[in-house]
Structures are given as C-alpha cells and as structure tokens.
Image (cartoon, rainbow, N blue to C red):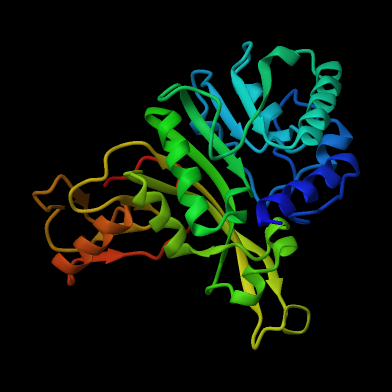
Length: 322
C-alpha cells in the first residue's frame, strides 16, 4: 500500500467519524460578519492554519480548493465569491465529498446569504485538477501538500501553476520543520497522513515553489504548530514543526531571482533626506520601507553604514517593494 492509499483510508475514516483537533488543536475558524459555521463543520477543521486571506479575495475570484475536508474553507471562500460555481472544491475521497456536501447544506440553512450552488464539489486530486489551463484566479490547499513526497509535491505544484491565470495566486498552509525530518518518521505512512512527518524545512519549501515558476512569494503567517518529542518519536532532540501560511503569485521569476516577502524592512539613516539606489528603491530617512528579502540583502550589502535591515516578522500583507 502506498502512502497516498494510506492517506485516503485515513480520511475516509475521519470523514465518517470526525476527530476534533486532528491536525491542529490551536486552529480556530476565521470569524466573518454574518457567517455561521455548523458545529460538525468546525469539528472537521483539518488544517494547520488558514488559506482564507481577505486581501487576496477581492472582486469575487474563482477559487479552486484542493482537498475539501469538511467544507469549512470552501464556505469561507464563498463568503467572498457569492455566485454559482465560484468555488470548485476537489477531493479524491468520496466519503469526504459526501460529508462536505452535508455540511454545506447545513450551512445553507444557517446562512441566508449562502446558496449551495456557490460551491461545486468535484472528484479529483492534486495531480490532475479537473479544470482547464489558466482558468482560475486562486488555488488553495490547507495541510495537504505536506503529505506528499518531494517528487509528488512538484507534480502538485506544477498542476496548480497550470490552472492559475496569469497573476493568479496559490494560497497554502502547511507545516514546516525546523530541520529535516528523520527518515524513520518520513517512512511512517500514518504520521505522514496526520501531517506530522512529511514537512519540509522553510528553505526547501520556498525552493519548491520557485522551481515550478512562481516569481513572487509572500508569507502571511508563521507560528509554532507541534513539537515532536524524543520519547514518542525516537529522536535525539525535540523537533519543532511550524505552521506556514503563504501566497505564491504566478508572475515570471525575475532574472536576479524570485521575490520572497517575509516582513523585512529597510531603514535609511544617512545624512541626506533620502536614498535613491538607482534601482527603483527610494528610502526616506528614518522611515521603514517594506522590501523583499532579496532587496533587503542587496541594500544591506551596498549601504552597510546607512541602511538598517530589520529581521523577518513572518507576516506580510502587501505594499512592499521588490
């Protein structure tokens, strides 16, 4: 049996008998005005963070959600795109699609603004998304891609890239690991299905996104997720897993490398009123300017005595400079 078959069996079971806190005991549904979440949908909140970021969802985008779970984030996306078929939710597990359909019908009864037609459930998986090329504005997945091996992860990312329109956005929430996961844990198929042994390091995770062609990546949040202890997981020292919420934008990778925003700022503190580096960056004296990590490094190297670069905050919501 492959790890994908083990994962399918695992989620068949939890679709029929929800396990509260299966992925992340600290995660709670995003609260939105006028949105009521059925109790069973909240119980099936199988994710380590959130992919629903309001500033990505203007103008009622078409959203392809991969791995529907209990339907919670499909419902939240529908909050921003209130039209038939705006949300396409794909899942390979029939039992999970049945559970999501039931939960969405409950949500329709509790939310006057929501119509069941807003969310279309389709059979399919991350490797063969059932939509044409360049046909959706947003692809989203929560705590799914970390289950894949690196080879399968590349397949899933290439498929997401394929279906996105130019300027489209891949919204992801996955665990990442402070150091590489030991081989004996990677080989444990049930731990992988539980989002505990397939996590990549941050650098590797970002590299995977750039490798398929995403030219801009923005970190929305990074927080502690789980600690794998020495006794239970046969480790020489505890291993921290973190939850990473990110947005990857389908724009060309610049010649000097992708732009990755992690919340760094550059602050000019020289003698002049402002600094113009002749590369499109103008820094007013004493005023923090949000920049991508690449630009932060370039400014720090070019102006070591007059530009202060702050550490990553691991939160970025737009407005910065590449």
